[in-house]
Length: 44
Image 1 (cartoon, rainbow, N blue to C red):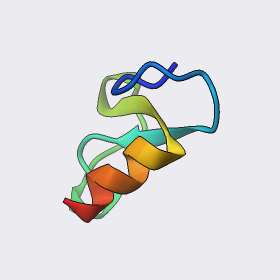
Image 2: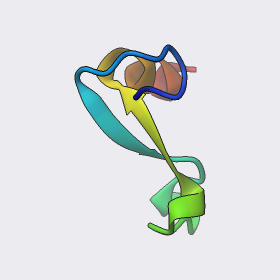
Image 3: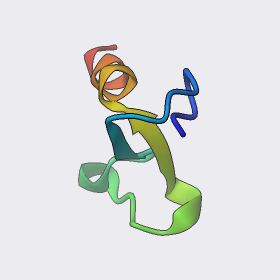
Image 4: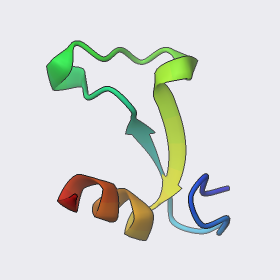
């Protein structure tokens, strides 16, 4: 489920702290977002 809008389709995993900024793949650094919300996070 998208943690932003609640949809159940087109899900992707987003790193809260980007891997390029030393973020890792631990569960606490990951959030599930749909493709639309994920794109929105990266645009802002």
